[in-house]
Image 1: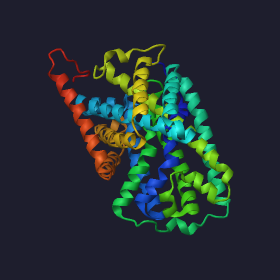
Image 2: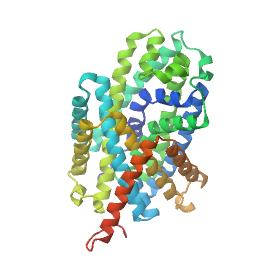
Image 3: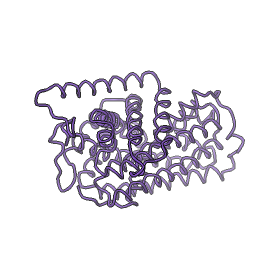
Image 4: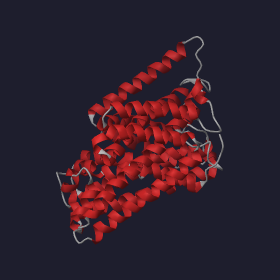
Length: 416
């Protein structure tokens, strides 16, 4: 594949994946789980710590293995073929469901009465953009990120200067705080950070990956944390934890409460645009992991073909599945299905990072260990239905791998 992307392009791809629909919707459920303003801010900090550990592990691994596929490649090379396969399976299954969730978010915000129609149109349109080449995707992502950040900045400024903000609400108690609630809130907020992996999955398309990827991932993560912290403080100061927990459109409610109701439609538009950015980055990342797995024949080998340097067949296949899911599933089910897979994917990334040597610029051992334990803790905090569905999907993937291993002419790439 052609290396076209520099540090700025890679940072924009990461921001497009992270500063997406989550910032417009995740704070309400997280506030309900946390139960208090201080606990919500603590949960944001905890999610950022886990994300930092995961990002650091991913960056060091991506510098050593600059190939499409992300943790599929790292697990394969560092832990063995099965663990790489399991990471790839978890990513493709979970994130394809996330594509449907983001598409449905676009529909619910932009055209509530015909959400599924718009969701399908969004997947088809952005899949077409991706097929035209990653540079065009990066430029579209840059535009989406600019619009999203402008909307968030306007809402934050309006909320803080509107006269309704009260610093006392930052420490107010809502529905009652607990350690489990804080952990569950951190789990909800973590998924809003998870897009930094999209940079690593573009390993074959960035210039000088050993330098570009380790710089781009922490830069994107740091910018995202600053944005989320500003939004969290604004929402708590204007609404308080109890009202925030009840809100399904927190930023729109906050600007109305602050005396700027004219900004509410802007917030809704920003949410739809941000969801489009997340969807674009998700389609891009899932298709690259699909490409890597098809090269090793874990998925149909025909999907590994490149057209003008782009994995068009993989992109079309991912887009087709996401279109079907957007047309048939509900938003809550799609998000719950993807949650377990994301955490398993990052747990394998951290385990892979422990196998790096000091000469390969391994991070301090505490970083991947904390990251792996954090993934396990956040996974344990998920609702039981999410855990059970995630385990079922993982079991299906493991069974398929075992069947392929026992076939006389089966082939598993890289020593598998």
